[in-house]
Length: 301
Image (cartoon, rainbow, N blue to C red; front, side):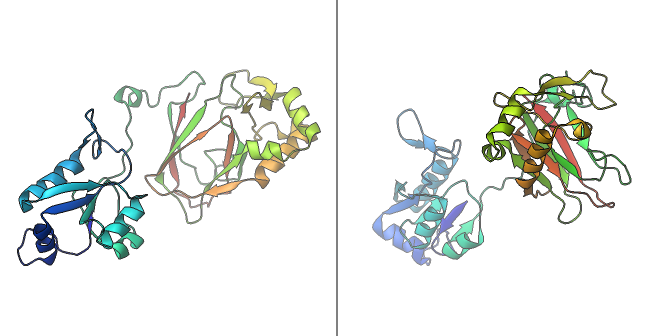
Protein backbone atom coordinates (compact mmCIF):
# COMPACT_ATOMS: atom_id res chain seq x y z
CA UNK A 1 0.00 0.00 0.00
CA UNK A 2 1.27 3.47 -0.88
CA UNK A 3 -0.05 6.57 0.92
CA UNK A 4 0.70 10.10 -0.27
CA UNK A 5 -0.46 13.70 0.39
CA UNK A 6 -2.20 14.26 -2.96
CA UNK A 7 -4.53 11.99 -4.98
CA UNK A 8 -2.36 11.91 -8.13
CA UNK A 9 1.12 10.43 -8.23
CA UNK A 10 2.49 10.05 -11.74
CA UNK A 11 5.57 11.24 -13.59
CA UNK A 12 3.78 14.22 -15.09
CA UNK A 13 5.49 17.63 -15.32
CA UNK A 14 2.20 19.38 -14.56
CA UNK A 15 1.83 17.57 -11.25
CA UNK A 16 2.82 19.89 -8.36
CA UNK A 17 3.82 16.92 -6.19
CA UNK A 18 6.26 15.70 -8.83
CA UNK A 19 7.54 19.21 -9.47
CA UNK A 20 8.22 19.75 -5.77
CA UNK A 21 10.12 16.47 -5.45
CA UNK A 22 12.20 17.08 -8.57
CA UNK A 23 12.98 20.65 -7.60
CA UNK A 24 14.57 19.54 -4.33
CA UNK A 25 16.28 16.56 -6.00
CA UNK A 26 15.24 14.11 -3.31
CA UNK A 27 12.24 11.95 -2.48
CA UNK A 28 11.57 11.10 1.16
CA UNK A 29 9.86 7.73 1.61
CA UNK A 30 8.20 6.80 4.90
CA UNK A 31 8.63 3.16 5.99
CA UNK A 32 6.83 1.56 8.97
CA UNK A 33 9.00 1.23 12.10
CA UNK A 34 8.81 -2.56 11.98
CA UNK A 35 10.66 -5.45 10.36
CA UNK A 36 8.32 -7.14 7.88
CA UNK A 37 10.18 -9.29 5.33
CA UNK A 38 9.92 -9.73 2.41
CA UNK A 39 8.52 -6.17 2.19
CA UNK A 40 10.97 -4.19 4.29
CA UNK A 41 13.74 -5.18 6.68
CA UNK A 42 17.47 -4.64 7.14
CA UNK A 43 19.89 -6.86 5.26
CA UNK A 44 23.16 -8.27 6.60
CA UNK A 45 24.89 -5.01 5.66
CA UNK A 46 22.39 -2.93 7.62
CA UNK A 47 20.75 -1.49 4.51
CA UNK A 48 16.99 -1.69 3.89
CA UNK A 49 15.89 -4.46 1.52
CA UNK A 50 12.57 -5.85 0.32
CA UNK A 51 9.79 -5.43 -2.23
CA UNK A 52 8.71 -2.04 -0.89
CA UNK A 53 12.29 -0.77 -0.90
CA UNK A 54 12.73 -1.87 -4.54
CA UNK A 55 9.48 -0.14 -5.58
CA UNK A 56 10.49 3.09 -3.85
CA UNK A 57 13.93 3.05 -5.49
CA UNK A 58 12.38 2.54 -8.94
CA UNK A 59 10.08 5.52 -8.37
CA UNK A 60 13.09 7.65 -7.40
CA UNK A 61 15.00 6.47 -10.45
CA UNK A 62 12.10 7.31 -12.78
CA UNK A 63 11.97 10.83 -11.29
CA UNK A 64 15.78 11.13 -11.49
CA UNK A 65 16.13 12.10 -7.84
CA UNK A 66 17.94 10.76 -4.77
CA UNK A 67 16.02 8.71 -2.22
CA UNK A 68 15.94 8.93 1.58
CA UNK A 69 14.04 6.49 3.77
CA UNK A 70 12.31 7.81 6.90
CA UNK A 71 11.58 5.33 9.70
CA UNK A 72 10.78 7.86 12.41
CA UNK A 73 7.05 7.06 12.57
CA UNK A 74 5.82 5.45 15.76
CA UNK A 75 3.09 3.27 14.21
CA UNK A 76 1.23 2.49 10.97
CA UNK A 77 -1.38 5.16 11.71
CA UNK A 78 1.28 7.72 12.56
CA UNK A 79 3.08 6.95 9.29
CA UNK A 80 -0.10 7.55 7.26
CA UNK A 81 -0.83 10.78 9.13
CA UNK A 82 2.72 12.02 8.49
CA UNK A 83 2.31 11.26 4.78
CA UNK A 84 -0.90 13.29 4.72
CA UNK A 85 0.89 16.17 6.47
CA UNK A 86 3.68 16.10 3.83
CA UNK A 87 6.32 15.18 6.40
CA UNK A 88 7.30 12.48 3.88
CA UNK A 89 6.64 12.52 0.15
CA UNK A 90 4.87 9.19 0.35
CA UNK A 91 4.64 6.19 2.66
CA UNK A 92 4.82 2.58 1.58
CA UNK A 93 4.21 -0.52 3.65
CA UNK A 94 2.25 -3.71 4.23
CA UNK A 95 -0.89 -2.18 5.69
CA UNK A 96 -4.52 -1.74 4.74
CA UNK A 97 -6.97 1.10 4.51
CA UNK A 98 -9.25 2.20 7.31
CA UNK A 99 -11.71 5.11 7.38
CA UNK A 100 -9.35 7.18 9.53
CA UNK A 101 -6.42 6.53 7.21
CA UNK A 102 -8.48 7.62 4.21
CA UNK A 103 -9.01 10.96 5.95
CA UNK A 104 -5.28 11.37 6.48
CA UNK A 105 -3.81 10.46 3.09
CA UNK A 106 -4.61 9.02 -0.34
CA UNK A 107 -4.01 5.27 -0.79
CA UNK A 108 -2.80 3.35 -3.84
CA UNK A 109 -2.88 -0.44 -3.82
CA UNK A 110 -0.05 -2.26 -5.52
CA UNK A 111 -0.80 -5.64 -3.95
CA UNK A 112 -3.91 -7.13 -2.34
CA UNK A 113 -3.95 -10.10 0.03
CA UNK A 114 -6.80 -12.51 0.64
CA UNK A 115 -7.27 -14.50 3.85
CA UNK A 116 -6.11 -18.08 3.50
CA UNK A 117 -5.67 -21.13 5.68
CA UNK A 118 -2.30 -22.78 5.05
CA UNK A 119 -2.03 -26.43 5.97
CA UNK A 120 0.47 -29.17 5.18
CA UNK A 121 -0.90 -31.51 2.49
CA UNK A 122 0.18 -34.50 4.58
CA UNK A 123 -2.02 -33.26 7.43
CA UNK A 124 -4.91 -32.51 5.08
CA UNK A 125 -4.69 -36.05 3.73
CA UNK A 126 -5.43 -37.29 7.26
CA UNK A 127 -8.77 -35.46 7.43
CA UNK A 128 -11.37 -38.00 8.46
CA UNK A 129 -8.78 -40.23 10.09
CA UNK A 130 -8.62 -40.45 13.86
CA UNK A 131 -5.99 -39.21 16.29
CA UNK A 132 -4.92 -40.96 19.49
CA UNK A 133 -8.02 -39.53 21.21
CA UNK A 134 -10.30 -41.46 18.84
CA UNK A 135 -11.38 -38.15 17.28
CA UNK A 136 -11.11 -36.97 13.65
CA UNK A 137 -8.03 -34.81 13.09
CA UNK A 138 -10.21 -32.27 11.28
CA UNK A 139 -13.81 -32.32 12.53
CA UNK A 140 -16.89 -30.71 11.06
CA UNK A 141 -18.78 -28.75 13.72
CA UNK A 142 -22.14 -28.47 11.99
CA UNK A 143 -25.22 -28.61 14.29
CA UNK A 144 -28.10 -30.75 13.11
CA UNK A 145 -31.46 -28.98 13.65
CA UNK A 146 -33.67 -31.00 15.97
CA UNK A 147 -30.80 -32.96 17.48
CA UNK A 148 -31.44 -33.43 21.21
CA UNK A 149 -27.88 -33.40 22.52
CA UNK A 150 -26.27 -30.26 23.88
CA UNK A 151 -22.90 -30.94 22.31
CA UNK A 152 -21.49 -30.01 18.90
CA UNK A 153 -24.09 -31.90 16.85
CA UNK A 154 -27.05 -30.29 18.60
CA UNK A 155 -28.59 -26.88 19.13
CA UNK A 156 -28.82 -26.64 22.92
CA UNK A 157 -26.73 -24.57 25.31
CA UNK A 158 -23.14 -25.79 25.51
CA UNK A 159 -21.76 -25.09 28.98
CA UNK A 160 -18.12 -24.03 29.48
CA UNK A 161 -15.85 -27.04 29.07
CA UNK A 162 -12.34 -28.03 28.10
CA UNK A 163 -11.95 -30.30 25.12
CA UNK A 164 -11.48 -34.03 25.73
CA UNK A 165 -11.50 -33.74 29.52
CA UNK A 166 -12.12 -37.49 29.59
CA UNK A 167 -8.79 -38.25 27.86
CA UNK A 168 -5.52 -38.79 29.74
CA UNK A 169 -3.76 -36.18 27.56
CA UNK A 170 -6.26 -33.62 26.21
CA UNK A 171 -5.07 -31.44 23.31
CA UNK A 172 -3.08 -28.38 24.30
CA UNK A 173 -4.55 -26.06 21.69
CA UNK A 174 -7.89 -25.90 19.87
CA UNK A 175 -8.21 -24.25 16.47
CA UNK A 176 -11.56 -23.19 14.99
CA UNK A 177 -12.06 -22.12 11.38
CA UNK A 178 -15.39 -20.48 10.50
CA UNK A 179 -17.02 -21.59 7.22
CA UNK A 180 -20.48 -20.18 8.00
CA UNK A 181 -21.33 -17.85 10.90
CA UNK A 182 -24.90 -19.10 11.22
CA UNK A 183 -27.78 -16.91 12.36
CA UNK A 184 -27.39 -13.34 13.58
CA UNK A 185 -26.00 -13.02 17.13
CA UNK A 186 -24.87 -16.66 17.29
CA UNK A 187 -21.49 -16.84 18.97
CA UNK A 188 -18.97 -18.87 20.92
CA UNK A 189 -18.11 -18.20 24.55
CA UNK A 190 -14.76 -18.37 26.30
CA UNK A 191 -13.92 -18.37 30.02
CA UNK A 192 -10.47 -17.65 31.41
CA UNK A 193 -9.99 -20.21 34.18
CA UNK A 194 -7.08 -18.22 35.66
CA UNK A 195 -9.43 -15.29 36.36
CA UNK A 196 -12.07 -17.66 37.67
CA UNK A 197 -9.68 -19.45 40.06
CA UNK A 198 -8.42 -16.10 41.35
CA UNK A 199 -12.00 -15.29 42.39
CA UNK A 200 -12.61 -18.57 44.26
CA UNK A 201 -12.51 -19.10 48.03
CA UNK A 202 -9.41 -20.98 49.16
CA UNK A 203 -11.34 -24.08 50.30
CA UNK A 204 -12.91 -24.44 46.83
CA UNK A 205 -9.49 -24.22 45.16
CA UNK A 206 -8.11 -26.84 47.53
CA UNK A 207 -10.99 -29.20 46.76
CA UNK A 208 -10.57 -28.74 42.99
CA UNK A 209 -6.85 -29.47 43.27
CA UNK A 210 -7.08 -32.52 45.57
CA UNK A 211 -10.41 -34.27 44.93
CA UNK A 212 -10.33 -36.71 41.96
CA UNK A 213 -13.29 -36.65 39.58
CA UNK A 214 -14.30 -39.31 37.05
CA UNK A 215 -14.67 -37.94 33.51
CA UNK A 216 -16.49 -40.58 31.41
CA UNK A 217 -15.94 -40.63 27.68
CA UNK A 218 -18.92 -39.94 25.36
CA UNK A 219 -21.05 -42.96 24.56
CA UNK A 220 -19.78 -43.15 20.98
CA UNK A 221 -16.12 -43.19 22.12
CA UNK A 222 -14.84 -46.61 23.18
CA UNK A 223 -12.48 -45.61 25.98
CA UNK A 224 -12.75 -45.96 29.76
CA UNK A 225 -12.64 -42.25 30.53
CA UNK A 226 -10.29 -40.59 32.97
CA UNK A 227 -10.11 -39.96 36.71
CA UNK A 228 -8.25 -36.85 37.80
CA UNK A 229 -8.46 -33.45 39.46
CA UNK A 230 -10.31 -30.50 37.93
CA UNK A 231 -7.23 -28.35 38.60
CA UNK A 232 -4.14 -30.39 37.74
CA UNK A 233 -1.02 -28.25 38.00
CA UNK A 234 -1.39 -25.56 35.32
CA UNK A 235 -4.18 -27.45 33.56
CA UNK A 236 -7.93 -27.27 34.08
CA UNK A 237 -10.26 -29.99 32.86
CA UNK A 238 -14.01 -29.73 33.05
CA UNK A 239 -16.94 -31.26 31.17
CA UNK A 240 -20.47 -30.80 32.40
CA UNK A 241 -22.28 -32.83 29.75
CA UNK A 242 -22.47 -36.27 31.35
CA UNK A 243 -21.24 -35.91 34.90
CA UNK A 244 -22.88 -32.78 36.30
CA UNK A 245 -25.33 -34.75 38.41
CA UNK A 246 -22.48 -36.68 40.03
CA UNK A 247 -20.43 -33.68 41.08
CA UNK A 248 -20.10 -32.21 44.52
CA UNK A 249 -21.18 -28.64 45.21
CA UNK A 250 -17.56 -27.43 44.86
CA UNK A 251 -17.49 -28.55 41.21
CA UNK A 252 -20.90 -26.99 40.59
CA UNK A 253 -19.65 -23.75 42.12
CA UNK A 254 -16.65 -23.74 39.76
CA UNK A 255 -18.87 -24.39 36.74
CA UNK A 256 -21.17 -21.53 37.75
CA UNK A 257 -18.18 -19.21 38.07
CA UNK A 258 -17.00 -20.23 34.60
CA UNK A 259 -20.42 -19.20 33.29
CA UNK A 260 -20.24 -15.91 35.21
CA UNK A 261 -16.92 -15.12 33.53
CA UNK A 262 -18.00 -16.11 30.00
CA UNK A 263 -17.12 -13.68 27.21
CA UNK A 264 -18.88 -13.79 23.84
CA UNK A 265 -16.84 -14.17 20.66
CA UNK A 266 -18.40 -13.29 17.32
CA UNK A 267 -16.59 -14.41 14.22
CA UNK A 268 -17.00 -13.99 10.47
CA UNK A 269 -16.61 -16.45 7.64
CA UNK A 270 -12.90 -16.99 7.11
CA UNK A 271 -11.90 -16.25 10.72
CA UNK A 272 -9.51 -18.66 12.41
CA UNK A 273 -8.93 -18.53 16.14
CA UNK A 274 -6.77 -20.63 18.46
CA UNK A 275 -6.97 -20.92 22.24
CA UNK A 276 -5.15 -22.81 24.99
CA UNK A 277 -7.31 -25.75 26.05
CA UNK A 278 -5.45 -26.00 29.38
CA UNK A 279 -6.60 -22.54 30.47
CA UNK A 280 -9.73 -21.56 28.54
CA UNK A 281 -13.10 -23.28 28.79
CA UNK A 282 -15.31 -22.71 25.76
CA UNK A 283 -19.02 -23.08 25.07
CA UNK A 284 -21.93 -21.38 23.35
CA UNK A 285 -25.50 -20.18 23.92
CA UNK A 286 -28.45 -22.09 22.50
CA UNK A 287 -28.53 -22.05 18.71
CA UNK A 288 -31.43 -21.27 16.41
CA UNK A 289 -33.32 -24.26 15.02
CA UNK A 290 -32.60 -22.80 11.56
CA UNK A 291 -28.90 -22.34 12.13
CA UNK A 292 -26.47 -22.98 9.28
CA UNK A 293 -23.40 -22.50 11.41
CA UNK A 294 -20.42 -24.51 10.19
CA UNK A 295 -16.98 -24.67 11.83
CA UNK A 296 -13.91 -26.83 11.35
CA UNK A 297 -12.04 -27.88 14.48
CA UNK A 298 -8.47 -29.09 14.81
CA UNK A 299 -6.44 -30.14 17.84
CA UNK A 300 -2.81 -29.25 18.46
CA UNK A 301 -0.08 -30.06 20.98
